[in-house]
Length: 463
Image 1: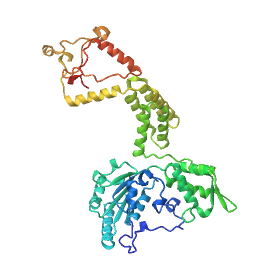
Image 2: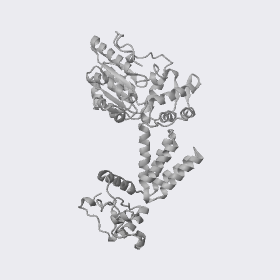
Image 3: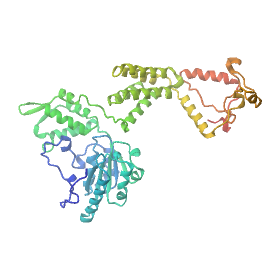
Image 4: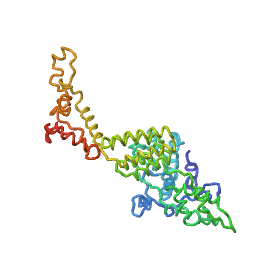
């Protein structure tokens, strides 16, 4: 929805920049404790630390379009408000979930009025900008270009994929990180001590262990941690005018919370990438951790089963062919047992693949063969490899010169290659010196001993 009061509020600030009433007990604690100044803003030193470009721009009151990219609860909306305030600009907020082209046009008209009547710039903050499609993003692009609006977008998704290139080229991207436990403890302490906006009037007591447990429960999200603190405060036991939040209460409040995981989003792909790389890197501990994280976040185990089979095919290959079968067996076991028992079968497969010898030789070889197929097109099958079921075909030389491999020693015709004549010396498959492929490589080297080696200098010998 659009903000109110920018054009129709002669007092100056829009509704979004007015301080809300601090005695409104109906507002969530996280909203009441929203930082009002940069000095109150916790974390994100990589963006707001001394000497950082954004910090310098804010200290000078300079505005530029930007995109804030980071997980939930890291301060994207708050930072956008503070940027507008530091620059003495009008602040308008839209949510891409609810807003449309009509809302953007209304915001543009209001921005024009603000500039004409009060000489103030306007910041248009678009939350969840990744929810806007290309046409919607194109709508406000001209007004960013001509300075009618300074655009600030917030997203939990990778802007490279979700924001149009024209807008990306006009807005600097700042990456916000999950808050660490120390940062969240600072936020919680401030809420406990603040008598105006926080819980200070209630004289709550909580020991360090319980406070740190709450911070851990926030999982990098300050808003989430403050929400849990508010619930824990309501459960606190009152004695002689003071109330105590116990560790047991904190654990009860935090129970059942899942780690951050966005199905199909940036975190989803980051985590499956980490799982795959841990298996490839022969780290069973890291592989189990990311496997457990994805299940904890709600990932479909069937998806994980499919990816585990892919790992076996892509990264273990013929170094240990049992890996593929074990991965398939684990998938079938999960199908029969379901969750949670069947998840252990998938965990077995993850650990086995992580410790198995690795080879991507077939993966690479297949890619090179496909590239040659694409590059050289429809090369003819050499005549000697063609079947000759008719007299005409025999007369044309089909099958002439073919040697039946089973009639040769070791069932191998020395010197023969079965590639098109234009590619006589290609070597796609190069066994890795690990696992079963050690023996495969030795066998091929022995059989090929009488074959002429591909020339290093010839184009035909290159892969």
